[in-house]
Amino acid sequence: MAGEGLAGHLEWMREARFGLFIHWGLYSAAARHEWVKSRERTRDEDYDLYFEHFEPDLYNPVEWAREAKRAGMRYFVVTTKHHEGFCLWDSKYTSYKATNTPAKADLLAPMVEAFRAEGLRVGFYHSLIDWHHPDFPIDGYHPQRDDDDFKAKNTGRDIAKYREYLHAQVRELLTGYGKVDYLFFDFSYPAERRPEIWGNKGRDDWGSKDLLAMVRELQPGIAVNDRLDLPDEGDVATPEQYQPFETMAVRGGRGLWEACQTLNGSWGYDRDNLDWKPPEMLVKMLVDGVSKDGNLLLNVGPTGRGEFDGRAVATLREIGGWMKRHNPSIYGCGPAPYKPPPDCRYTMKGDRLYLHVFSWPFRHLHLPGLAGRVKFARFLHDGSEVRREEVDPAQEPFNTRLGGLPAGTLTLELPVNKPDALVPVIELLFS
Image (cartoon, rainbow, N blue to C red; front, top):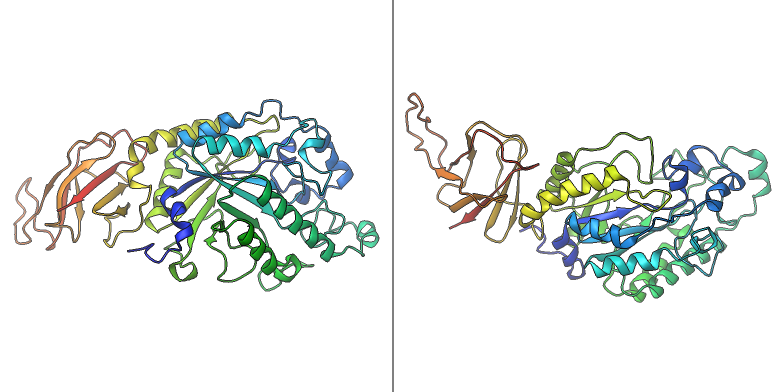
């Protein structure tokens, strides 16, 4: 069965299946995407406007944690530092941090405490990139990549000095906040991966091997993602903004994959981005991932005042309503060795098979290969029985009587109206 070769320190993550991503930084005040500084070629002195006015007076991490738990999430990952270089914690290596804004506080510590109190595992995102650091060499992603005067004045930037800073901050994070379950680096872009970008940076620039060794030494058992440019050494593959076509092979079955997805089209708070995914679509993405032995890391970008946008909260609560009744088909589940009917997905755990019906059919679902194997079938949302029959392959169709079906087919008899669930789930208990 899928997951049998999984590394032991990742078992909790496969059991959890559903996590919360949080992108929060100065870009929340701009409210135009987390890459706004790069997209708009903004100079440091102009971007300082957001630093001077970052005042999350409504920040309440206890509420964030409760919303995540209510949604059925079991771990969270927060951007300790995104590409803009701003730090949510009181780092001793920089003045570019939350304690020096009107927030006047380490914003990371109370967040970690709040999510732990709700029973969620702790994950830190940390950017390898830093557009604010004076020794980070300018490249094709840098906000001032087209400013010739600025580039001429900054030709002496030293990646070795920046690398020391990067490693020191990671050490600080992994020694100052207790047990960290997951570290999500973002991202390396060597020339062979991003040939369209000039000034590429890869594993040697970040000191990826030494960095990963330090991480594992400081936090034994931590899960680390796959964005350090070290093939086959990351634990978790992280496809972003798409759903994999099939199960992703990660370290020969020893690793995991998780789809990283947004609620709308942006990771950071983006006030005018209206590409909000409906809750039904998001539930289907979660189910689709689990059916392929993967997780879903679903993002919320808090506002500049420190709240989850109301649209995000409404979506999380709808997902939570579905998870309350259907989570047995998600937690600890993986792929099934059976082919589901059209517009359906199977997940499986032990001797229980879960049929997720994406498109509601009229009256019947035909399940190949399951005849004689199922002793009981019921809807998860209310526990009500779903009647079963096995149609003789030689049976002649007559009026309302079904004609013969392929040998081994189990037929489920359904109500005409779709149950009141974003995605109905039928639990099949094996004999």
